[in-house]
Image: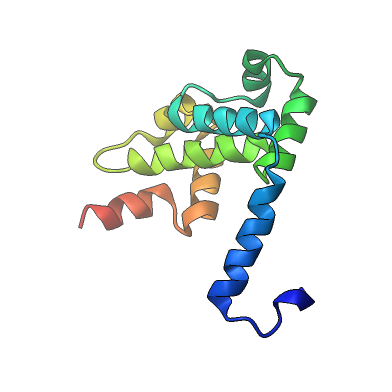
Length: 134
C-alpha cells in the first residue's frame, strides 16, 4: 500500500489496524459452524464417518465437504483421519493388538491403519511403539 511506504512498521501497523477494525465485518455463521464441527471431530472420538457427521449437523455430505473445504481448508474426511491417526499413536504404548485397534478406530483392516500412521509419522505403528518404549 503506497500510503504506508516509508512509515515505521509500528505506525503502518497501527494505521492498518484502524482501517481494518473500522470495517467491522459481521461474524460469519459458517465459520462458527465449521469450527464447531471440526472441534467435535477432535473431542468426540466416536466420529468415524463423514456421512454420520453430516447427518448429525443437519447437512448433506456434499454441503459438509464444501463447508470444510471453504472454512477449514481440508475435507472432513481428512480431519477425521488425522484424529484417528492421533488416537492410534496415543494408544501405541504397551502391548497393542493392531487389528483390534484398527477395527475400534473404524479402519477397514490393520493394513489400512498401518498405511495411515506410516504416512503421517514416517514409521509403522509397531516401530513407533518400540521407539517410545525404549
